[in-house]
Amino acid sequence: MASRLFAICINTPRPPDLARFWAGVLGRERADGPHGHAAVLPADSTGLRIRFVPSREPRAGRNRAHFDLTSTSPEDQRRTVARALELGGCHIDVGQLPEEGHVVLADPDGNEFCVSEPGNEFLAGTGAVGALACDGTRDVGLFWSEALRWPLVWDQDQETAIQAPDGGTKISWGGPPIPPKTGANRLYLELGVPGHLDPEAETDRLVSLGATHAGAATGSGGGDGDQVFMLDPDGNEFSVRGIRRRG
Image 1: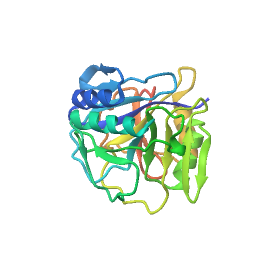
Image 2: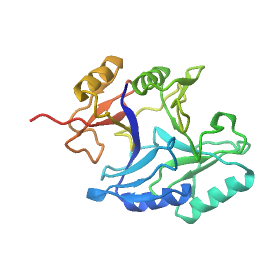
Image 3: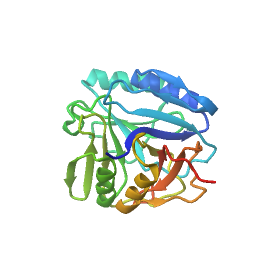
Image 4: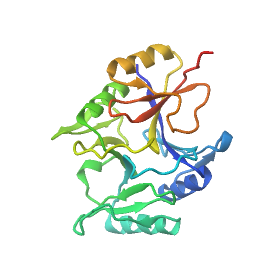
């Protein structure tokens, strides 16, 4: 058994405010944590926790990952967009074409996300958060498929996507061209090591798949005594919980 995906984390200078926004947009329950952390809880057993981590790192360019939200009808899409705007979101232009059906928005911290058009076959049956769409190579998609033991549900023209065996949110990578990385990612994956696994053996397994240990200064906030940061093959930060640092 591999690590499980515990949360999608977002670094932010104001975790409670951003958690309030996303809880309102998604219609989910919000929970405040210790040390200024906050979270939006999963809607069901296949949903993912979104965790908001205190960080003073300045925004450095466009994010390498964003949420694609789903819609059940044109009216549902309009309601989601209106709700996001009422809660403090805004429309942004990332080069989308007028004829494209999705709506591109940013949350109050400037994190991009899309509200997809109804009938999007790729996001069918995934839930409110249809996908975490990432910039990335095919190699990084294959890495995460092995790391999480999630099957590939798309592998074509250098684009990849994975999904948990029991369904839910997909994670996708768009293939080249990939914009250069500027600073630490604001959005990153957080893995949890099940209690019966040896944490060091698990990090060794991730290294064998192509991960590397991050340096002391990753730029990702909220690290604690049982958490370490690593880098995937594309240099994206991710954290592993259940690791007790030595010394």
